[in-house]
Length: 320
Image (cartoon, rainbow, N blue to C red; front, side, top):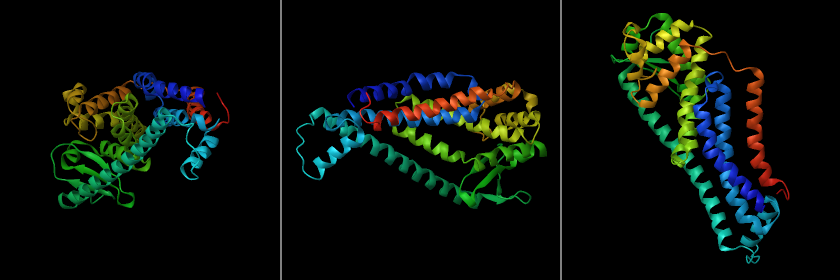
């Protein structure tokens, strides 16, 4: 397992730095957002597995030729009182680091889930006071606010789509339909689970390029996926106008470039949200052909290999 630990460390380093940077700059994800989303998830999973696996295999190296045998040796030391003379200080440190990192990732994942659920609960309570149910649209509420606002609040059977009076005044029926389909796609495709996972990943390892670039890219990809869902029902021009109106807070006669200074479909002023709106409008105004099937298949095969390599290095007997 000596060389396996080095191989896992090298893979973790590659997946933590050059790969996410290259993927975040690539143009093809806009042509196949689903495939790119799968790749981002695999990069995060394989990177975390490699990072923990490198420390684990290094720490267990004196106890066996593979993970199973080494864990048996560790069990004998911890439970049966076998002598631990083969374990040096560096091995104990590596095992401790692997354990602490694993516990840290799980704890942050659960803590992020708790915070998100608590925030949604407070938000739902506020909506109960400040909004009124839509008379014509099920699972939809309307808030009295002049700014165009549209977003979804996940909650299983209690999921709801929130619209503002300002949005209803600015959009035509077709444009409003495009917005509603977009928001309902977020709910039906469970995009909130992806956002939770990548928010936890970034909170746990904020210094890691993978976590930062992945969260930003995933935010844009889920918007593209929801746009694709809307395009199956409404004309591209309708969706473009809806995104432009909601993103700029005004009619598109003022110019699509105003979208660069306002926000997203949900009206956020955040800089990343502004950039995301510009990317969405650019993608809708100048659509590119979908990624060929063989290229999508190649990326998915790569995803399988990225997960298989660290798993094999961990469990295969006597490898490397």
